[in-house]
Image (cartoon, rainbow, N blue to C red; front, side, top):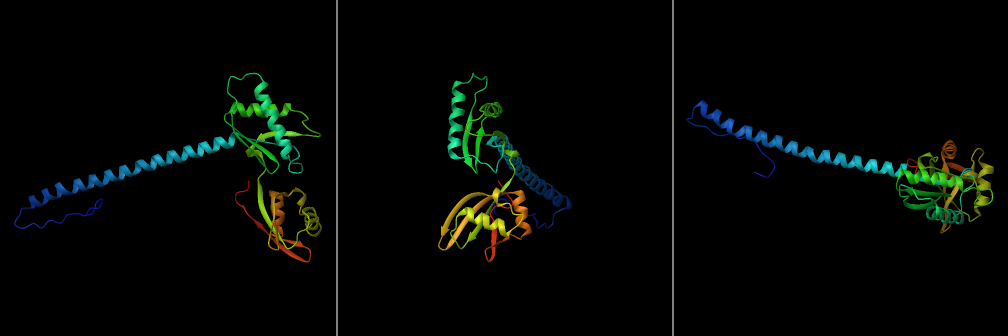
Length: 242
């Protein structure tokens, strides 16, 4: 018999009393039933532990999201931060950490990132997040007409990544103007260019667009009018957004 399996015994009884048969059943069946029940109870323990572990992972992920702050221009996405502006912000934040009054709680960060004209900072605790938001409001005009805001990452409007492939190598501004002229209601001015590259005869451009732009593309069935034909827009992360 292989390990971990069992079958009910069928003893051959000859010239034995009914009492003997009963004693055999009583000695065999309960032991198998107990073993089976024990296997079931042991199998439930890892499931409970897995559920607890999964919950901890979800809680940790939620906490990291709650402690993530975005620094951006209040007029975003029409006006976005540049890399030079982000470097200046980094210098000012480090200076504030070093020269500001001591805090009862350590001000700590888990890292920074720059993406789509937004500076992202991952705070290590709630006190750091609150300090960061207050500090950004005190910076004032770091450069001409700066209007900075620090908000929770979850309050940033969801954006989506789309791709357009064209058979020309025109300037990006010319492409936008052409799309705007031939597709009324398509606000391409708010499209944020992520990447632009040429592969063979194809010009490939990836954009980040907001919910409104995505709905406008849906009305066109993701086929925009361009020059003397139509071009298909591919959505790269329709469900996720970012």
